[in-house]
Amino acid sequence: MHLTVKILNGEECTLAASPSSLVSDVKEQVEALMSIPVADQKLLFKGKALQDTKPLRDYGVEDSGKIILVVKKSVYKPTNTSSPLSPQILHPAQPEQPVWEKLRVFLQRHFRERDVEAVLQEFKKEFERNISSLSLDDIERLAITKLQQV
Image (cartoon, rainbow, N blue to C red; front, top):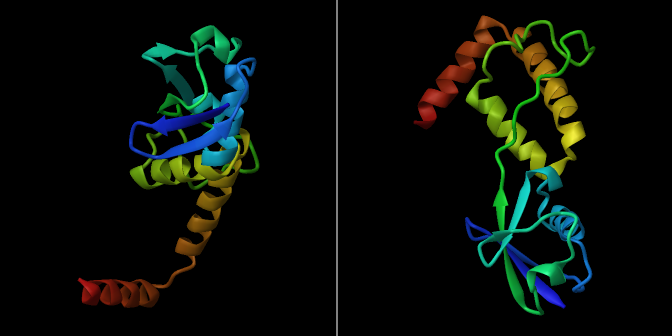
């Protein structure tokens, strides 16, 4: 049977499943098609939350059925500060700046959850290294360029 999985913001995908497919199998397909980690997915059918361990037939899901996908907000889990991936310049105890949260959301669409923090920490380290190597003349040229674009 074919199912449509629709996110509340309008995106959707179509996937194939059988009535005996577990909800967790559907979530894995959604992760592969839409790059949304399984842990961040909550599936609803006719207003009822679907449990990962149950087959679709238990909920009466039939061919051409529409399942609603609610994407959970990810909770930031700081990495161990003694890790070699944690730059010494950054302060993980402080709340994250919005740019890093937006980057984390972007990375979650393209990487597995276990890899997101490592990639983010490497990006932060590289960013800090590049920023600290700028001279005042470089910063002034950058500012002038950006002001001229406004």
